[in-house]
Image (cartoon, rainbow, N blue to C red; front, side):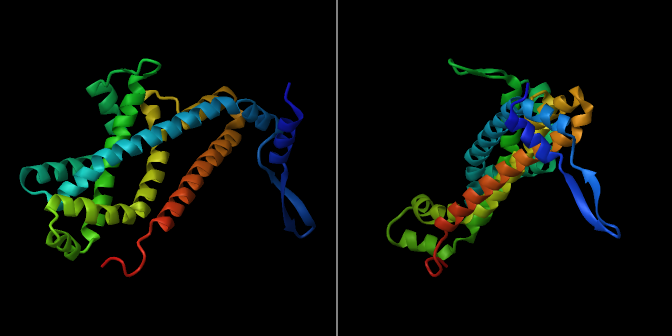
Length: 261
């Protein structure tokens, strides 16, 4: 039996939406039904597990994208020859391939194995999801970092060389810190995209938030609207929270005017 708090939330969610008409305020529609909202809230823990999986998948994919994408961006700016052409070509292929195709290739063609961590294990579907989303993110992050590395004035690199730093040291200690700070707005956008792209992993059978929501309204079809609204609210909270956090980082680490060319 549902507790009074749950029933109160359900009642509030099913409140009438009223608009003015010629005869005064008239009821236009209802946003869901009390029984359907009660069904959603009673399965909030089930959706919560999907939300946690979505968060974990997003964070792991973004980190993999950074680990691969930053060096790739640096190679495109400072590299030359075969390595630069290979990195550029692979990036173009990944950015031009639909994410669902990348995930299917990773899971069904490459056949990524399950990873055993001792205390826990990562399923092959989860591993394929992280690799697929991570490599696709790396292709886009490489362009973010390529642009920010290129945005640092060449004179600063030369200034680093003039005080005895090698080219690598000048890039590492002079250019990279500025490029990372300038990359936060682009990185923020990429984080949001990866978060929403996690919904595509349903194609390889990974039960993240959207897939679990589909399972729920397949079980009780009258709650379709309520489940979708609940899931949308979770995505909004996740997106809003991460965007505000990255906004804060962007403001905190912004390069003060006049300190760089």
